Image 1 (cartoon, rainbow, N blue to C red):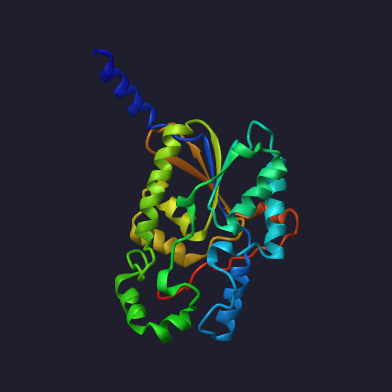
Image 2 (cartoon, rainbow, N blue to C red; image 1 turned 180 degrees about the vertical axis):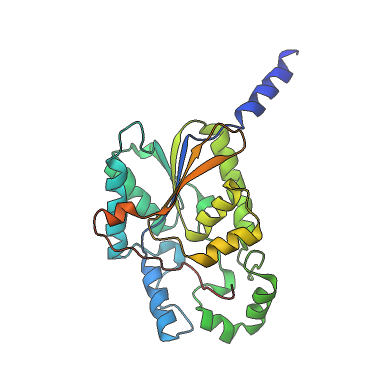
Length: 262
């Protein structure tokens, strides 16, 4: 029985390792992004899209963006490009991830769907614009303004802290199972920012300031590399759009959710 404490100690040490490179990618422009922008511009209360949020596909421009991103990764040397891709199950993210995997010729088992990477759930506020929320749910709009977007949880939906809770387990799995690997994650704007909160040990004020400054571009890339510390990774790129710029693909920064009070 003397070996058991040693085994436990070794396991704990291994859990402190990180992937060598981690790319956080927002999906390409979606049909939902386009519909939301149109609804906000017209002052409509509801976003006009005939499908659930999880099934909103990439727009034609989103397909171009995903293809450009895939070609950019494929141009890397095999020793630098992602070895595997994790994606949200939402169609716009899964299709973006598929385009990257196809461009690099990754085996099917290297592309994995993880429901913990899904979009923040909006609950009763789903499909409502900022105007629509204030008009139909004034009490909730007032509560959100008081509580702040970090902690506000709409009925049937999630707060940012709820998203953070599920992402903590994603990072635990990466540190346990993907030490030294090169991993790309394709997901959503709030998820990308929540990963930044965790990886950079930010607080509420810092992450909301980042969120307030600008939206994450569609197919934008935020990159982290292991820096030798058992507790941190180093961010080398933030919302990088070079894959789109190099192919003259239009860059879009449409929101995935109502903006609401900042």
